[in-house]
Image 1 (cartoon, rainbow, N blue to C red):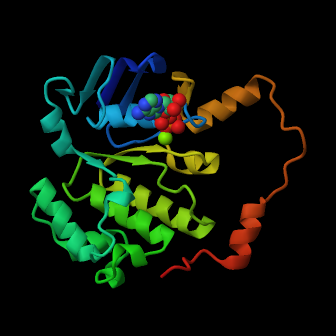
Image 2 (cartoon, rainbow, N blue to C red):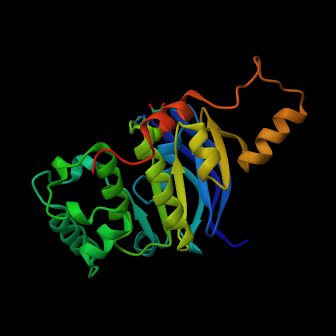
Length: 252
Ligand code: ADP
Ligand code: MG
């Protein structure tokens, strides 16, 4: 297992407030690594520091063998970051936006090839503001791939999406991983973390309180004597919903 990101004793203070309290973890090359935790746990702060978008207070971070303190410009070229969708010019078409972002990255991109990856070729001439929520998220993931990064960072990419769009995004994220890209993702959906993530770190109040594979975490809980309060049915309401409404996306 090759380590692609190392975070050691990371601290972030906002004024007197200690948002990240000395966390350490490694991310392995090629994995989907999940950062979970309640709102305010420090997930976005941690991601943005690794993405070189936010200053840390202290700690050491290495990305692709490069020291964040010395080589942040080189790191920027190796990673793909989701820009805030509010930063997209709503009146530009998807192709125009990709050209614009390609220019920012100094990358010669083929917009149609990129749109094909995220299943949006038939929306090439649509404006960003005309897309559905799921399509906007797919487009935003496409923009992380413009500079052919080794690692992409996705901060709550499926929040607010319907179950079909969420599953569609899981397939997309898995296909990106299958091409060798390392993925770091935050989510509030535990089923999503269980489906997608090879390993997860659970953060709470600025600390990592557990780090392992979802499978191992569940096994550890059960072997500690944990039992669900009521008998679990063989299907969930979400299974009912998907069974009744089908898996296909509605926003095409
Ligand atoms: P998460 O992504 O896990 O919800 P964040 O990293 O966004 O958590 O925030 C962690 C804590 O830091 C929260 O208490 C939040 O209010 C605080 N925080 C985040 N950004 C700032 C900022 N720019 N200035 C002051 N406090 C901030
Ligand atoms: Mg956040």
